[in-house]
Image (tube, rainbow, N blue to C red; front, side, top):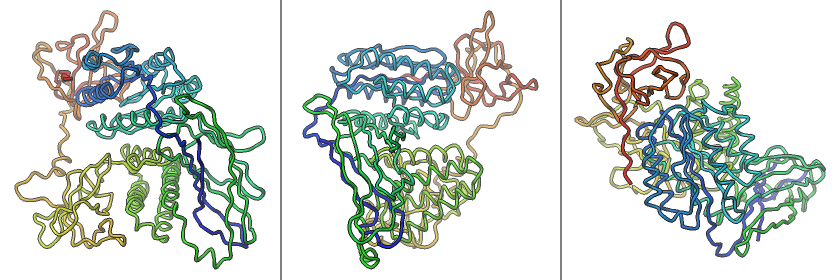
Length: 615
């Protein structure tokens, strides 16, 4: 029922010297025609002010799409939160989908972010209907930082682990650029759930569908692997995302979480091996256990496997073909390097972080792995991140992409989740431009499944093939002119030859010039208002503005900032004539007052009108 196999990165290890070796272990629940497991699901959605407009609209549409994909045997609840926690849909079987979607569609944006309150309420609902034969899951979506309720990441992370021990697993979804990725990844890891970075508002439905597909495919849970190392063998590193501990005998215990139908759970290990004579070298004994679906009932299964390396002469090792799993191990090695580089950079060791990434690039190229398109793409990512780290300019978006790419590769074996990133490279704005293609080849950058891909537009080339292209100048919608293209050695993708320029045809708007100057400018002066709120201009988008809400504070009406990165409890200088309890406004700018503990609204004020979500 639970199958395992392994491969070393070298088919034959050389005799005569101690060496480092990487090994890839695979686990798969072999369940013939596994039936779909029913869900006990709570959607917990951030409706704080920073979600106002298009973000909340798309989040709610994604929630409605979840309803469409559920069955009457599934249990669903929907929780929404800002500073208050509400339940548009109490736990119930998914029988009246129209009513459920209508309740979701009535949700509107509000105040600040009580993440813990909303999440714990969703956990309570799932716990109240806990069924070990179902997938019991909370999906927590937020676009911001917790600034009300329990805010300590250590407490929230440890609580996620405790809830998982009680049978309630949490998956976290970070929306756009304002959320705390360390918190959401930490909660997902502690709970053995999943984490997703929803990079653009229109991909919310796609990401929700990926998670639902994953939940339907769960055929095993609580996969635990214990390593019993042979004499002289030592564990250097674990190249997979896992919870690691030691048992009473001192053996390493690795918790890998869920098993998915048709998907191998990968465990990469980096080991120091002793010198050995030609023949078989015992490396470790593997003890594993999991709770697996069998005949529509969850049963505990366990097993033991011996891991043995083949040792040959130096000549035999040199002439042996590289292991066929070298590409998969390289993906894990790259993901681990990204995680390490980010940690180093945040400790101030930017030079060491850059050097590690560049050393890995050289190693991958020396092995010829850049002839594989996915590894070549990873090399471009490594180049991009190494350059950004060296400049101290990784930024919020770069940090999120780096964390997401590392997490997804180390956690899952799905190509549609790895290498994602749609933020435009900064260098695209400074590129030289041309007005026509001339004798060159025209390329276009498009977004496919959360990734920026470059395709050929000129005739005479295969438009279905990807183009290997520098990550630093990729931007969705950009067009380029290159001198030429050459096929990779296996003919599966193109490489750019010669110089690269950006194409900006006469008479067509240059979206990248416009993007640099699109942010509205504030006068810097304190806002003034008309006679009443009804006289304010209206908007249904926040854009680059700041969202403000009028709240009742005792007998007074106060204006408070509800956009993230501001103090939610500070008062604000704001025109009294337009204050109405509960109303949302968009202002051009918010400045800190001279007292250092309040704000001043500056520039134009618009009344925010909630967009309608149609079912």
